[in-house]
Image (cartoon, rainbow, N blue to C red):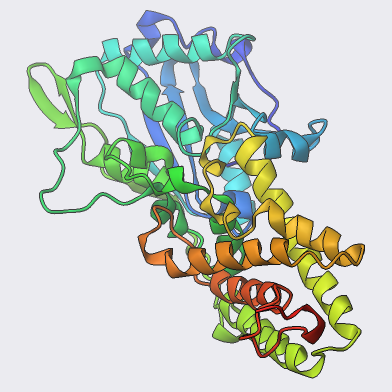
Length: 396
């Protein structure tokens, strides 16, 4: 969730941190950073700050370091094989970045005893080893926030107590949790919803919700730590370090994906009526099926050729099936294979009818696109009941 490649101040900065006598003097803080305006930053960010007054040490540890200059960056990201790293740098540098980005930062002290703090130091030192400093990033299960959660859990063991689930409250899904941060960016949300598969509609437990930085802050703020025979709040009250409003973006209905795609649907109906039986019809369908074929290729890739588990089992592949590509081939070579178009029509129609019972959330903006596919596939499927059917293909 941080894009800058940080100069890692590895053991030079941390060698003194792991000494037990200094762990008793250390102060640990959870830093939570507000959402930014870039796609990778809209979910916020988490980091861990360690202060040791006796050695004038003030370091921030950040498990969200990646580099856009990584060779084959886009391909590795698409394949789910992009590694993130642990970075260590000064607190002053950390704040400077967020001042420049105009994002708020909240600090909360961790109320841990010296044994738990010493354990965190050992875990960080282990993370900083060359063989451990990089890890395979997973947005929901292994990211900058979950790494901090996991370290705290390991260091505190059975002394960490999460609050019980609230009775009668339905747990949110992973998709709805992340979607709350995407609501001001409807085009981004549509693209993400289109790519994410059924696994993201799994219910997230209290602990699992902490993949989001603000949820980590809120969750740990409700948690307790057993020390000296009594239970104390794990985190102190939040202190606002950098104050900026959370960026908000006005999204008009006339620029939303649903409205734009609905206009395209109306246009498709008008063109279908105007071009019925004319040569221009083929050009129109080649354009439409080229677009849907590209989307079908995306579905095939992310369902079968990526390591991103959250992108697999994507039910959008039902209406964006490989048969869409065969329809395009039919159009390009003038084969008029009505059977392929019928399969696309049946699959898209069934998908639309079953939307309410599918075990996967489908963005409403996809509905006009599905209807366009139904319209044009049925026109070439040889169905006589379709007023836009091509006369020379009508069979039933």
